[in-house]
Amino acid sequence: MVRAAVLPAVGAPLEITDIVLPEPGPGQVRIGLAAAGVCHSDLSLSNGTMRVPVPAVLGHEGAGTVLAVGEGVTHVAPGDGVVLNWAPSCGVCFHCGIGEVWLCADALKGISRLHARTADGADLHPGLNVAAFAQETVVAANCVLPAPDGIPLTDAALLGCAVLTGYGAVHHSARVREGESVVVFGIGGVGLAALQAARIAGAAKVIAVDVSPAKEELARRAGATDYVVASATTPREIRKLTGGQGTDVAVECVGRPATIRAAWESTRRGGRTTVVGIGGKDQEVTFNALEIFHWGRSLTGCVYGNSDPARDLPVLADHIRSGRFDLSMMVTEHIALDGIPAAFDNMIAGKGGRALVVFQ
Image (cartoon, rainbow, N blue to C red; front, side, top):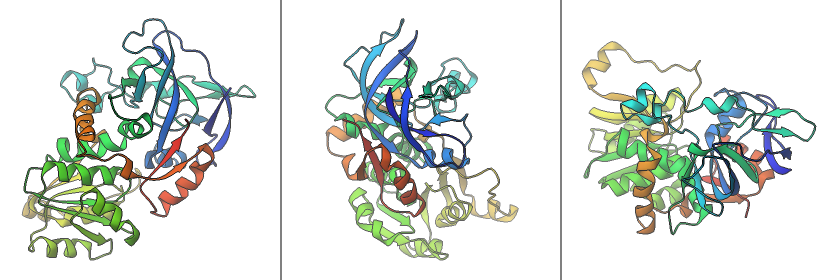
C-alpha cells in the first residue's frame, strides 16, 4: 500500500487514498518519490481539457530514488536518483526518426496500462505515464533518466516538466538570440523557467506579464527587467516598452485564446510567438488573412519545450550548478499530498509559482 492522489473521474475532486502498487515487471522501475511538482497540466487532466483514461493517479513532474528494477533494466539500479520523463520517445516512429522526439507518436502509449489498484480492487491508470502524485510509483524504464549530480532530488523534480518546457520554449522553439527582447505571458512554473532561460540566452529586455501584481518580485528574481499586469491594453504597453516596435519574441504560457492573441500582437513585425500553454479544443484564436501577410510574424506551437530530455538535462544541470539557473526560487509552496487540491485552486486563481509536493 502507498498513499496517492487519485482522480476518480473527470471533473471529480482528487481523492488522497491508499493504492496497491505491484512490483516492477520486465522493463519497469519502482521509484520512491522525493518530490513532485503540481503542474497546470495536472489541472487540465482533472477538468477534462486533456483526456486520459480514468480513474488515474495524476502527477507527471517528479524525481526520486530507484527502489527496484525489473528484468532487462540496466541503465539505473536500486539507490540511484532519477528524474521522471512523462513523454519518453520510442526511437522508431517517424518523428523520432527525424530527431523530433518531443512529438513521438507513442510517447503517451503507456497511459492506458494498468498501473495499480485501489484498496477495494478498482483498476487505476498512470495519468501522464508516471503517476508522480504518490509515495512510490512503477514506470517503464524509458520514463526514468539519471538525476544530475550535485542537485537535490527535491529540486530536480522540476526538471521533469516546468524547466524543460520553459527552457526549451526559449532556446529550441523561439531560439532567442543575444540582445533580443522577450515577453513571457503567465508567470507560473513554466513562465519562471522561460524568464530564466531568456536571461541565460542574453536577452536585452525581458518583460513578464501576469494577471497578478503580486508576482512582480518573483518575476524580477527570475530575470524580468519589466513587469506588466495583464489587461486589454497589454500589447500597447509592450510596444511602449520596446520603442513602439514590440518584442522580438513572445512566449505564451497560459493557453487561453485572449492571451495567445495578446502575445501575437505584442511581437514586432517579423517577430516570433511561441505558444506553450494548453487550451481546450473548443477554444479558437482568429486572425485575418491581411494581418498575417502584413505583420510577417510567426506563430508556433511548442510541445514539452521541443526538448530532448537526454540531451537537455546535462545542459540544464550545468546552468543550475553554476548558479545561472535557480530551481529553488521557482517553488513558492511546499505541500503534502493532501495540499494538491488547494494548489489547483491557487493555479485557477493565478497565485504563486510552483507548488511542490515533498515526500522525503
